[in-house]
Length: 357
Ligand code: ATP
Image 1 (cartoon, rainbow, N blue to C red):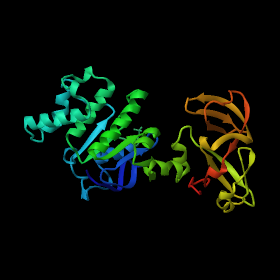
Image 2 (cartoon, rainbow, N blue to C red):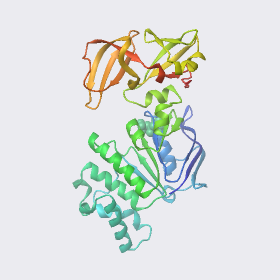
Image 3 (cartoon, rainbow, N blue to C red):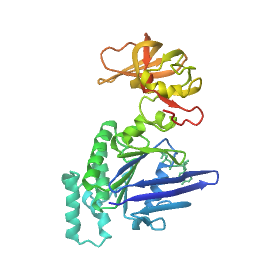
């Protein structure tokens, strides 16, 4: 276990722009932190800096208060799990697992005991004599995890480890990695562009954009109280609908989606402060219900079993999704009415995108 601290961490690949741009982040002992963000936002580079595979141009990386940025990757006591598994194809599972222990001067019997312990933890016992080519994708991923665990590192780093797996296996491995992380209680940094992975696995989600941290918080915090429009739109599927809106002079109504919507009593104070102003109004699919307010044309209906998603076009041309209980769904092409719940709406400043709610 280790506490990790990044201070002003910066990496420039060219003069014009920093890939990692002055990141400050403290990760506690045993914490599972997920770095998430769109392609190119600097997630992998941040992870590679921590691993020692890249050198920072500025800033510090502290493990338990000790600067490590000058140290070779091998001297950092970190283990990295990649999407490509990076297993040795000519070695058995047992030898793949034990390989990292050789350099540490453990005796043969000590190595065998440690490998057996980890194989047990990962339920790999029956596969120890097989070569990687004779394993399924999920089994290879477990061996890659095992190889990291066997070394008992201070820090686990995961770089999109599940992106080569099919959807069902991805869901299964998500739970598995989380379970293992809890058992070994090692500090973990996990990089993904998949917001479902981020939301389901993280103790804390760090949303990155253009080399910077846009927001860090528990999954519920970043989902329910996004600090910016960017975070709001990045997390949640289907995405939050965000539209320009005009608040009335008395703050009692908001004109949005081509309709005048009433502001409920408990949100009057929020909107009164923005009277006669233009804002960006955001509504998640679960906050757009069936009901009389705004006329909507149904474009697509997705019945998912547990819920139904209705994709609609609103009078101002906005496309939005509505998440409803299954069983009473309209059909594609229907003209219906929906009620955006202003009680749960998010308000963003046009331009900066900062949350005002
Ligand atoms: P992805 O999800 O696509 O892997 P990412 O968020 O992990 O993206 P990084 O791989 O960290 O992003 O890349 C951040 C930026 O740095 C990108 O603009 C990328 O093109 C650039 N970059 C990364 N590695 C190098 C390199 N070795 N040389 C030059 N530019 C690089």
